[in-house]
Length: 216
Ligand code: DX5
Ligand code: ZN
Image (tube, rainbow, N blue to C red; front, side):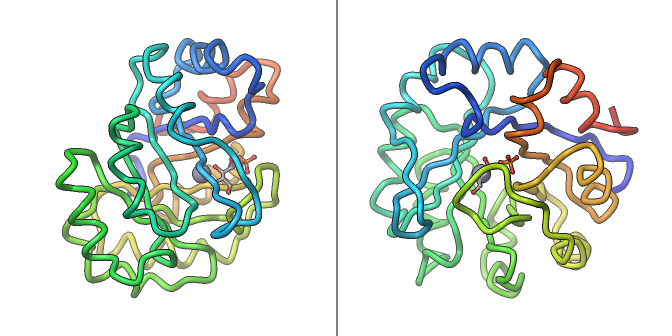
């Protein structure tokens, strides 16, 4: 995927939650491609974040696609509520889906782009039954649950292996900065999720440009 266009999806987990609308607009103005929303249930991951009401509140403030990352158990029970709230893309964790093919089918039926995420230690074999139906694979580069963690370089060979058999989006999420964006893009990733790196930057536009690297 070297030379392919890199898409940047700021994770609003690192935003000022008292000013979510302005923070979302700030990312659009700074050149973001998608807005990434991290939904955590306190069960699948040891943290709680936002629900569909927040997605609904953000929907009218931006024209960018809303990329909803569901770190929740039983995602099948919540897909339609997040789609109604305005999600354009929904990503479920394979580890949370005993019948992944059924969940993917359900999500596709709702008319959104569908992704499947894997924790750093989960092998890509789990994706194989749905690989021809999904638009995106999210290879987590930290253990999901919190922003601001260190990138796990052991995920790089997994990105390379997946890129050999999957031609759609490979997204990386966790510890992404201008250096890890370069190494994950060389391995085959094309969608960079970044929270801390973009929101804490003095200049969000410059941070986004730097994530696009040479492929900008
Ligand atoms: C972690 C979330 C990420 C997180 C990334 O579980 O899925 O989207 O916000 O944050 P940074 O870029 O700070 O590692
Ligand atoms: Zn995420």
